[in-house]
Length: 163
Ligand code: GDP
Ligand code: MG
Image 1: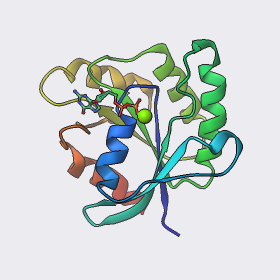
Image 2: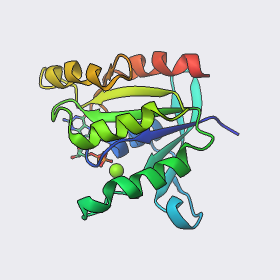
Image 3: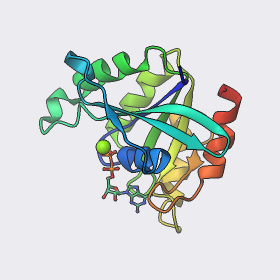
Image 4: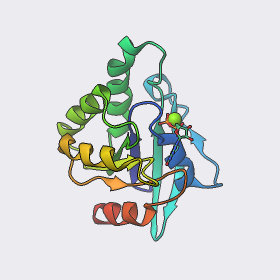
């Protein structure tokens, strides 16, 4: 079985864009387990020399903000079981939000290693968000543009020690 890498983050930060870039044209499988895992997408990713299963968690993207954290935790907890490493994605252009900070707090207390990914970092618009993200206490952010495919080499280098 391939090691699993799970993508975590609040809505609209670019999780699915990153998932699609890593999976490419290969078919993404929707996990058909019942309950909290129903919205999980799993694909086979290739990044330079690394092969892994990539998991896009989207089930908590709900219109009711009151329900976000609870559902997010249930989803994430289920998906984190057995994950080799988590990619925690933030939006470098938007800067940090309270939900980013809550997810970070939760991830810091989990046992799964976390790679902080500052997405939408193409051009200069992400510089402030990248600097802010050091405050999350999850180490150095990897500056990435999932949409434009920039920073994928740095993501590879950050993943490598976990394989
Ligand atoms: P998700 O909700 O976290 O899965 O986010 P999506 O992947 O659906 O992306 C949300 C929005 O951000 C879409 O409009 C994407 O086109 C945009 N987006 C994703 N990655 C990037 C990026 O690297 N740069 C910019 N500028 N926009 C991006
Ligand atoms: Mg998505």
